[in-house]
Length: 160
Image 1 (tube, rainbow, N blue to C red):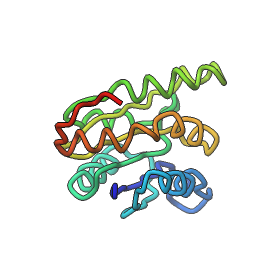
Image 2 (image 1 turned 30 degrees about the vertical axis):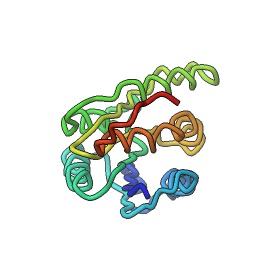
Image 3 (image 1 turned 60 degrees about the vertical axis):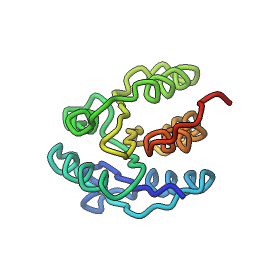
Image 4 (image 1 turned 90 degrees about the vertical axis):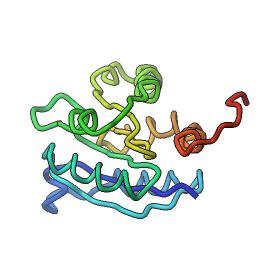
């Protein structure tokens, strides 16, 4: 069982002006990899608050997925918060999402999403829109269990 925290980053969502459709979608998609969501929060686009939650949850769960705040708007600070928190970047995850996304839209190259490890937790940034969440998470979903196993110290060979 993979334990998870889902963090939706949205100014409007955090004050009830916008319904969060992406967070529930992530929770639903994670069922296919036997993941249990232990925490679900909607936060404003505030870097220090995002960092605080990432640090807290990295001590409690295997996987933290954020949605939102990865674009070019002035208040989009999720990647910066993530980079300030992680110990090691896992660049291939974000590269894979952007690469696959470019097959559907050139706007994929504008994503600033990052992924990395904090202690024994994997943190992955996803875009904010439900369509982009579905497309991006589908690209990486099957590697998440293996990544979590490796982060926890699994020493088995990686070959399939």
